Image (cartoon, rainbow, N blue to C red; front, side, top):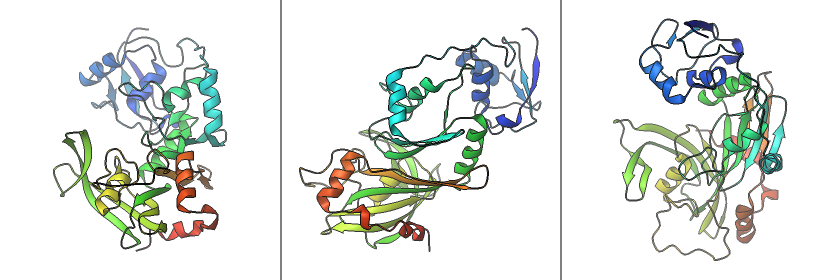
Length: 331
């Protein structure tokens, strides 16, 4: 199709990123060309220049230069189902309805691809792609080595709703960690500014002073149990969502998370040989409002390596009172 098109953003596309909108409606458009026509101002939103990461709003008008087929007229997509990937998704799904699914993401599985990362959650979701070439969408992220609750949206409307929920900090996220020694005081908050900095081990997040692009970060924490003061089971509630926030905060407190390859900063540390291998950080609980006004509250079982450590240290989840988590954000 030739000529300029002016396309109205649909209700179910509200809050979708512009580049994602193009990938849905114009799947054959190379990303490099999309970037170029946006940069040159050939793509407009309500007659104004726009960036690729702009969030759309219902009723806005997108100017599309002559680039190919109109929306909803491109060829039907034949999904390629990888049965192993599909089975893995089934095995780690702990909740599912018509609009969302919640995974208990295993330790070591990346959420998105990157350098030398071929297997990741976003790739697994290709096995759930429909005939329009659309697949479930990631709503938030977990580090590769962090296990636990990961929300996936199965529809555009759900992605829009839960994207807003996470950005407004309406989602309640509770993490469990095993740390070195016992934090003092046993309950409190960590509030500081963080920024990405270059180190001899590559880029890492660091606690810095205010200004210069630094971002404020806030976490509430509480010691649930400890093992002779050498290890602690800590419950964490991040209020903000900065990169590696919980890992940086616990290291800054002097109680780094066990087996953290980036931020464990205690020299000459000796740990029991039978301790579980891998980062001891788990997204235990996710509670958030559904579009119908009800609340979804999901709990993810501990991964095997953390369960092994809990058993070794005598941390018993059967005697744990989940209501304790509700006091984490009290001042």
